[in-house]
Image (cartoon, rainbow, N blue to C red; front, side):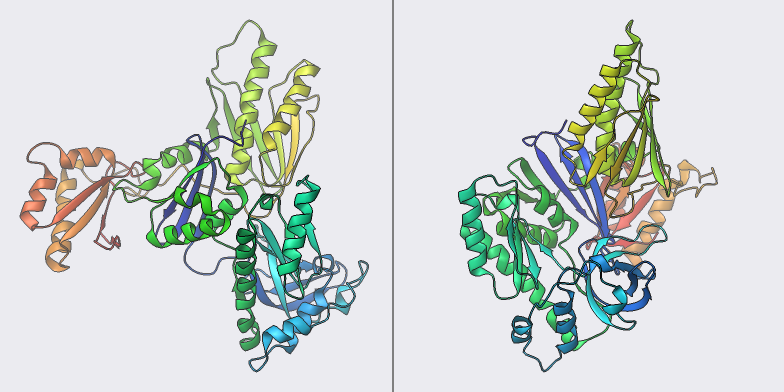
Length: 521
């Protein structure tokens, strides 16, 4: 079960096409996510200037074009209480406007009635500011809200709002009053805020700095609204790295390792803003070994994302994900049976519950989850397992609900579904034989590599190369006093850094130049 004080490490692997992020707790992978660094993304928290495409009176909703191939969806109740001020701001802003004066002088007016009709508020072709609350999943487009919010570590900024509310988890009335008075005194006109639990005990300078940063982020987007008036991304929520830090950062974080200098500086700057005392935990990783291999993340990903997931002592899970729901089957496997079959079954189910709670976070599984535990005769054991599952799920940030076991040993869970389930195919097509089952002779692999090396050094003029290979191939190329690696260095007058990649197949290899750009073999 997760403890607040257990040591956490965040590993950030920056690659040319994507950024992969792993959260380790006591060295064990508990969260994994990745985001593309190329092209347009549609992620939770992104704010767009979109165009209304179609009104759906029967659903009291509308389709909105935000630049995705799948049109986004917004319901009347997601327009928010004060949609009209946002609408006025979009309509009245132009390149000749004083946007700050325009924003401050718009009256909030009356809130939208809860029983109103969307056709009375939106029309096809109308431009609206909207924010993604649920990413595109399968055939469905993004789910939107027009009630814009900018979340920080301690404060959530609300443009065109009046309220300043404080988290109910802050129990001290004096602290609530201090925070409310502080934030109210520094908020400009037409802004509201929600003060988060993390703000408790924070210095005024930290809160003021974060609030100014959020206001600046919102106001920087105004020029895009005034100058363009077309479909456009106004701003994104912070990167996944900073979102994880924003939501989870506490004293239990011991290290944040990043293998890219630019992301390292961004992360360090962000932590200095939200928690100056922890700025030193951000570290730049410059080791030769792949960062995920160094921290054994690759191995854990391969074992955790398969259809069959091993637990302890021979037990295992079988996980199936469909469009409608997720199904998890618990199996005792070859686990040695004790004389007390009921006690043995209960122990296996507890171990399975721990892994299931981890898997839900790891894969970001949402919607309905059905777990088929091993049947137990004892009502006390069924009830204890239900309570234990509730305890395990308490550490999950996503909204969830756990129902008691049925008499058939089935447990139903629901978990907030805001993005597609993370899927990683652990059964890879061999990059050497491409699925044919036949590969070139291993005896000729050194000649094949040398022919590429000759081209890169003589024709392309490369003087320093990185050769990534599988551990088996690496041992073959570097063994002995007269290894291939040493012969090639001397023959082609170049430096060759040999790096072993555990994720590579037996004869797989890749060349990279000094700028870490992959060279086509």
